Image (tube, rainbow, N blue to C red; front, side, top):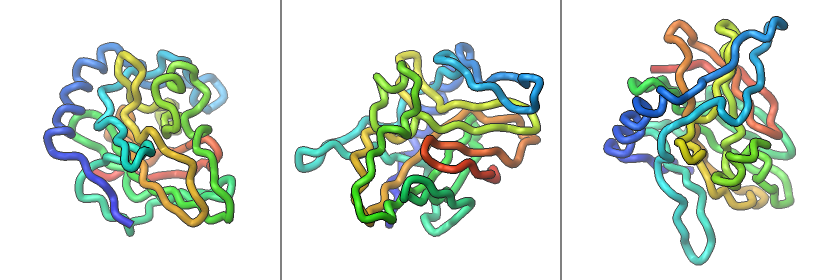
Length: 205
């Protein structure tokens, strides 16, 4: 399996956009008194522009799987399962622009096609702008007691893979997600995507 990559220029644009967006962003919620980070609302994060729009090939919408550079598809930080699918996290890298890029692949190990709509989460604004995406993913810094949501722009377009078609039996799709970065002292976070179990992921970079 191969991973598609963004260009250096695209990464620079995303980093530049973050500078303007962070003034509006609310990167997470504080401690709720029970040791768990709170679930945020629709204004929990306001990220930069998506890396690339979905493309079309042979009349079908293809997922936007643009991601960071130099990603080893054989690397495995974590592996989580849910609903007959297995998700392998290849990289969670801290970038100089103040965000974390998470690279992963999802394989359908079952015998039937799987719907991908649940991965976008339940937030109405995100669902409208990012159908069939991984916009529902979150990171939790348990030490800092904060939850971080997918970056999005002021029009609620996420900086993550979008336009993911139903995943056919035996097939794999590559995905990426970008989040505001927790403090540099945080080296491990919990990752969650709807329908999958939660897993701890080490941050590199």
